[in-house]
Image 1 (cartoon, rainbow, N blue to C red):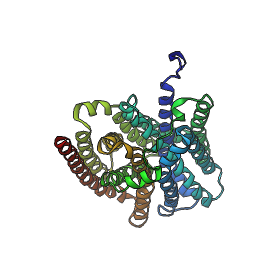
Image 2: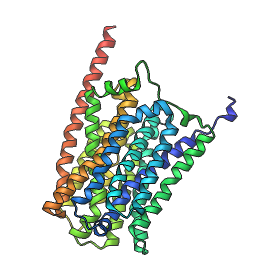
Image 3: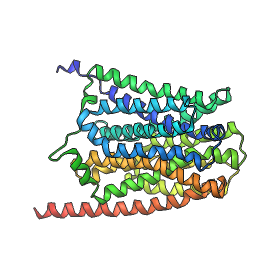
Length: 403
């Protein structure tokens, strides 16, 4: 193919960025809409968590199938399926007259988010040209997460109800399917790429990766991380309004400030990786996270701790994904990333659900205190992963020296 006819590289990057904006809008928009859903369906903090639980089946399916679908159909087809599932779920949220239908459609939403997360992350870190953009990619998730609450707060202040807001969000997410479909019609090469199966089948590679402790611990680490991120995104507005009597408009924009902190941190990730390295960046982030969560718990009259928490959370997911190809053999990377990202999405349902059940019993004011033990567990897992990775590096060095 002549050089002049090679499709621009930036098209694939732009689609990847918008895909992460789409899932950011989807996940973060719920936090502002949750109190209205509680009232409309006459739910409690415990029963509303059925919406989170229903997403789990979709996340599990994405964890098992992302590397398989990518291998058999290609990245573009997987993104088209994912964006269609996500758009359909959001439309059902906005149009459904029954709570039970909304709960069932949560599985479709979980599938869409899980496939996008796994597919785009794998494509980015495996391309030498785009791997340095991993922080920027997740920064665009922050852009979507910042826009979701801001759009929802603004529309509801203008008189729209939560169902109409979901239809607006569905239209924004649907643009991803239009972009992917157009690129596939034009036979855009990166979207036609299929992950190679290697010397074994994709299923066997997935099974092999699940036997590696680094993969399992990385999945658990990101499960807790996303659980904290989503727990804050889903419940902070409700805590501020119902438990702390913060004015609704102030509470809504304070959640956007939380996502703004995360967005800024993501866009600055490249600087921190160069200055501190990935491991030290994670260590500093976890310490800052503990301080921010303590402040949000003990200083309820202020909300400035929320953007600090967002900034602290920012490097954790992309830095962990960036480290996976450096901690594992190349053949295991696609399956490992598919598993860890989907496990992380599983945390987005599991932990906010647990928080809701406990808050239904102990009161919404207890939610800030529930997040601290989770952050402490992440510190322990981080140090465990560092020790395992150093052990593997030492073994490889020893083998190389003996040859």
